[in-house]
Image 1 (spheres, one colour):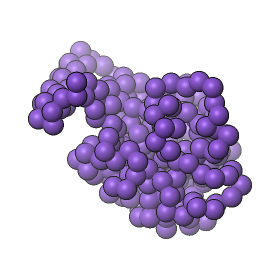
Image 2 (spheres, rainbow, N blue to C red; image 1 turned 45 degrees about the horizontal axis):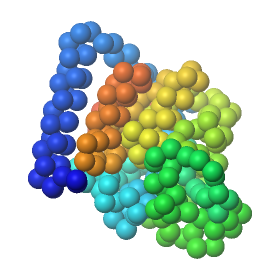
Image 3 (tube, rainbow, N blue to C red; image 1 turned 120 degrees about the vertical axis):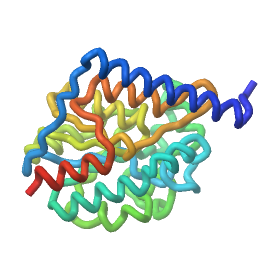
Image 4 (tube, rainbow, N blue to C red; image 1 turned 30 degrees about the vertical axis):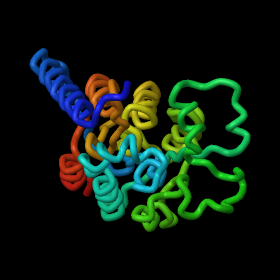
Length: 253
């Protein structure tokens, strides 16, 4: 049986308290916080899935992620990252999520893959056509279009499950001499976390922007809390948007 809204709110609150306690314990136990030193020419911002289906109230996942997006001010914080990147001439890379008709013929998939296909998330009619793309769930949030469509932002090929193993993001970063990644976007415990893990495995330094992301919160599962635990244990640094922007201003001249 599904929990009532009150029960879900209590469960989410308890989960948040538990994760905060867990992070506190790891700090008390001496878990390192290596940090990332931003260097001009070596540092880039990577945004995963800044698309309507995740970040617009009209998107197909809003009922799952909307509360967390709103609480974290994720939409506004990603915009702030775009703005500081523009002012500092800091390169921005976008890792999008698109599904074409042939992707719906896959013969197997994980739970969230099945859910995404069932919802029609990120659907496009054709890999080489933009027919019906404008303002669709796969399109960029309108707020971000001036930044993404500015002729400077790098948009990689689409990742197909969660991580950049299935697109050319790592190649694009390497070819631009990037070794330090500021990571934000959607969704925290899925595509964003998967990108963080692969970037770390590939030898990048990664700083995750904690309120520049969000996740689904459903009965029994707090995706955001799960992601924060893993970010703290794996990434080089986890910082808020405010902290990250201050650091960029201090270190990128």
